[in-house]
Image (cartoon, rainbow, N blue to C red):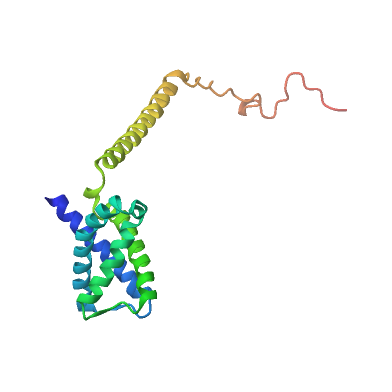
Length: 190
C-alpha cells in the first residue's frame, strides 16, 4: 500500500516537473499558480486512463505507435487539460507540440531520478539487491584488506630480529690519564 502511494506521488511529481518545464521554457504556455495543482491532477488522471487505452488501440490498429504512446497521451492530455481549465493556456499549436516534448522529457527525467534519489523504495527489488550486494562486497573487501595489512604487520614484527645490543663505548686512547704523556711509539719530529 505504501509503495502504491509513493508510486502515485512520484508520478504526480514527474508530471508536475514536465508541466513546469513547459511553463518555464515556452512563451505563451501559461498556468497560474492555483491552477497548476489542478492541471497536474487532471493531466495525470487523463494519462493514467488514456495510456492503457491508447496502448490497446495501437497494438491492434497501429503497431508503429507503440513506441510513441507516451507522446500521444501527453499530447491529448495537454489538449484535454487546456480545454477543462480556464487558468491554463497552451498558446497555440507550435507550443502544444513543443510542450508535448518538454512535458515528456521532464516527466521522463523525473521518473528516472525520483526512485533513485527520493523514493528509494520504488526501485526495482533486483536493483536494490544488487546495490546491497555491491555494498556488502565492498565492505567485505575493505575488511579483508585491513586484515591482510594487520597480518603483514604482525608477521613483520615476529620475523624481524631484535636489534643487536650496542657495545659499550670504549675509552678513547688518549684519556685524561694520558694527557701530557706522549704515546709509547711517539717520535717527535725533528
